[in-house]
Amino acid sequence: MDAVSLLQIASAFLLNLGFIWLSGSWCARFWMRANGAKRNDFEPALRRLDLMAAGLGVISGTASLLAATAIMGDVGLREACPMFWVMLTGTDYGRAGCVANAAMAALFVLRWTGASSRAGDLALVLALCVFALTRASMGHAGEDGYWSLALAAEAIHFVAIGVWTGAVLVSAWFALDAARVDARVIGAQDRYLNRMSQAAMAAVMAILITGVYSAWHRVGTPEHLLHTAYGATLLAKVALVLAAIALGGYNKFIGLPAASRSQRGLEQVRAALRIESVFLLAAVLAASMLISQQPPTAL
Image (cartoon, rainbow, N blue to C red; front, side):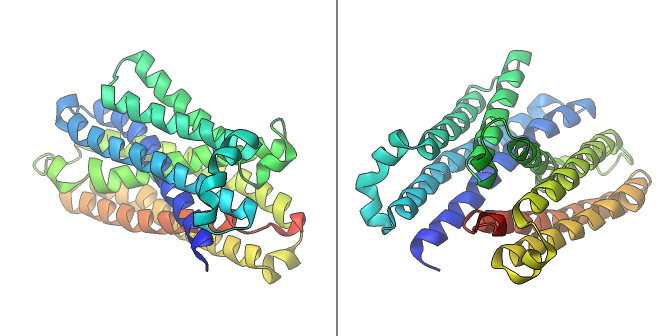
């Protein structure tokens, strides 16, 4: 793998990771407040993590556009630098990338200012949706135009991944961290866990429906799925997602009831969520690799 391909995959993964964290943290704030947590108990630390995610998103988005410049020009990264501005201003891909970066920069500013009003929350959702739609348009789904079913499915898929993976990531490594959970009160996290589970289930349903459509639209036939690099990467992604769904099912039907009865049950839920987050991040990496590959139906 050359430097251009490596930068393309790495920057796409990190950019998606920034979006995922910001989506999850937006949801987790509501769930923590609904669970009775005081804003000052979690907001300063979560806000710092959000700023890191948004900043990473802006940097990764810029690096992704540089990699795209090199690919379009069929040159190395150094030779792509003088062509960078022309690509940004002279191509649809470059202009869309600027919109996505602007949305990520807006998320950084909103978190920097600490906007916590209803208007601030709506602005955050709008920026996240603009980013998701724009990123979807920059992929293979965007080739059918802005008003296509393929693009709508990809945008919904992207948002659902952000909600599910973000909820798991933020819950596992922040909201349910032992330092933030009162071990003396059994069942104190029940409301948070129930809302997280409901959101994850809705997101998984959206992912499955849009994922099946997108796979059919890009792969075409089972033969392409089994005998192409794109198909092999897609199968790896599907296997990782199914493993994550299995862990989510365990938490839904076994872990959450146990967490409402004992502190040990909550610890098991947290452990399952952390393993699930690893599977989901690996699936996101596989999805980032798909960006660098041509789908069989496009060949």
